[in-house]
Length: 162
Figure (cartoon, rainbow, N blue to C red):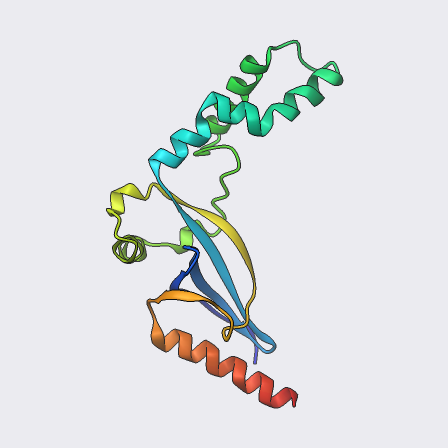
């Protein structure tokens, strides 16, 4: 089997990760994980004290290399400004694959999590990789047919390997 691109919303794990089936291929399946991001989270991440805590080491390294004479606070405000100018919601935000999530999926996710869709500002890409569907700890399954298709696909692969 050649890789079959799926890219569909599957469910939400018990830890709150959004799961998309990315593709099925001859040796298994891959999924993409996302987190929902609220405005409150963005505000917290952009708080100057939080930024200093998380990224102060960059200023220290830059000062050590004699590449800045800015104070820690000036340096952090500069990093935040650069990030915003480049479209970032907060430092460390990864919007890879976020285009996979359309408005209908966002509404389904919000409903399942008992959130107003407007409370989800964006999503954060958490990772992509091979998955064993028999151990995927889903709290909510949006597409049971897709789950069964992926699970059966894995079962066939295991049978062929034996």
